[in-house]
Image (tube, rainbow, N blue to C red; front, side, top):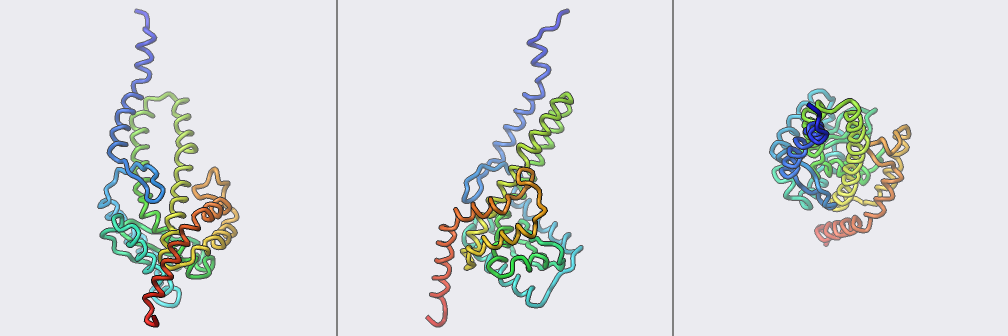
Length: 278
């Protein structure tokens, strides 16, 4: 019996039909949009699941760290965190409904970093403070991390990981070696890394607005990222990095600055009106 080339092509590509069917159902279920930018997001995790995961991760991380509980640096982090949380609640009330904000200072002078988890649990490392130098810059970094939570970037990354597992389990096992290598290369460089840079850019934009609404000068973002660029002078090239370069970041921030200044001016005017001297 001779082989039918049409049937052969159908058999060879049968995994693609199965994959497309599953992907369509997942994408339709998990369609969402990022705040401010309106970017379409694939999120297949509920906000209640995010909340639980965030709380569990926070408790686990703090068990392994040295936590600062007093002193000027601790007080500064609490002061800035409270104002940033208030601004986040005001600008994005639907996303942060039910959040119980908490800001911890972790003693690690070598770690220039901060993070935030769903549910409002956040942390700053002492190594970040010499780079931020002042409260305005610290607020910009903390608001950037809070913005990742507001835009549900963690859930988005987790959902894409779930999607990757579907691809790996259903399609990859049925592909020949050449096809597998092509798919992995396309996903690793063409999708995953640029997608992460998109998230970082969104967090920069939302974080700038949040910190400005909290009453912190958004113009401090430019010297901040210049200092951060020097602190990370050994960072990889932008194409293979999950973060934009400082030069790219500063150019984007300059474009967002007019709107950020509107938030800042309104916040300063409101604070002046509420002052007991008035």
